[in-house]
Length: 527
Image (tube, rainbow, N blue to C red; front, side, top):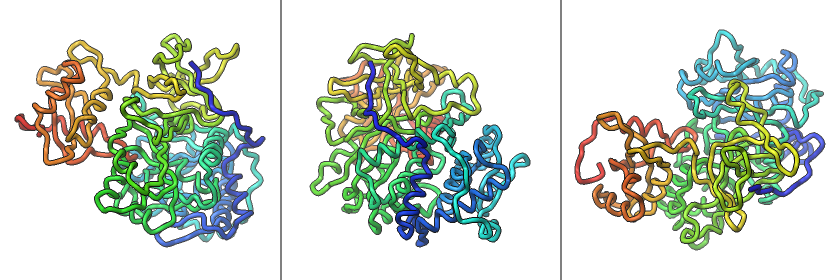
């Protein structure tokens, strides 16, 4: 089974920052970025980025180099990113929301790291004897003497533009590289498919290290719009909602769990800032559509919810689906839609043969978005391979996700192939249990973790966020048995006030595991 995206011609040199430069020339006085009351126009941001690009080139960090960026959200972050691209180099985000120990681990995973851009607030977190660091604030005087015009660097669509860390199954962070062509193709698709323009102002709400944040940062500059940056290092729902309310922001990219928080914030306060957006593009984890249903259906809501699917190894987004078309009674799992431009989805069996229409298979991504591979994980690069299609070999990335295509031609993602675990001798995907729990009255949110009993055997523990006063464990178990076989019903039900989120805005599975290890009282309630 192959699901094909629309073919759209790209420029001969699909280079991301060139589109930004076109806007800087055409609309130099338009506001490019707003942060904590400070504004930079396209012309000002372009000049600052050009000066930093000349600085990098003078130090020999041009085409093919890798430049680390460890900065809080600020105009300087965009200066560092654009300047790195203009020099022909690729940037690597080091998220200052991470603990310093984690950042030190990541530093050692970047082969050939040229230098790292820091600030006084982040420099100590990424201090290294092997890698030089530069502070843009301290460099301000020197940079002011460098040319404000773009350097004469020949950058192609095949050059790497950024590399981002992704966890994966090995336990060692993998650094996956993205090419200009793939990134350009993604933003060109977003702009054309969803009519983004100079008024499509964005707000960033996700942590810098998240692959989703890379396109969230650059898309407004690609379209000639304004980028609004948060003043907080970590996601702050109150601050984000205040920015949405006070500015003419039209687009937000975020993880599903972050969207739930924003929706809850709006519902609790009777606001309309989120409902008045043009688009929210979200995904990154299994969707709990019931968390959004009442809000999405309320009168006056004009926001288009785009449920998207993709992986960091393939430019973050491969498919998209307008959630307004979802009918819960007809589709148990909300689709993630159809491929982006110049992108194909292949569904393959374990022997890399295409499955028949309607059958489940491993989701593999092909086309312009397929990245350049892992820079620090040799054996894992086997996920980047080829498959025969139409009589020729096609490059694909094996996601490890399983899914199928509906009769309407939409992709449905069912979960991870390797997420299945054996409990009492039977294979179970915890995601299937989470979906069943989320459909129960009184359950606002649910997450399921694989834990160990006193004998060391695997069991399931459910973490429940109640919609009302509380939940009775025996009642939840009895209702779950009406729809699930006994072996899929969790052994324990724990009630918590909210599901913990990682800096990326996804459910923090490690934090749930910590909760499991704490002593807890056994009683008739989910406590």
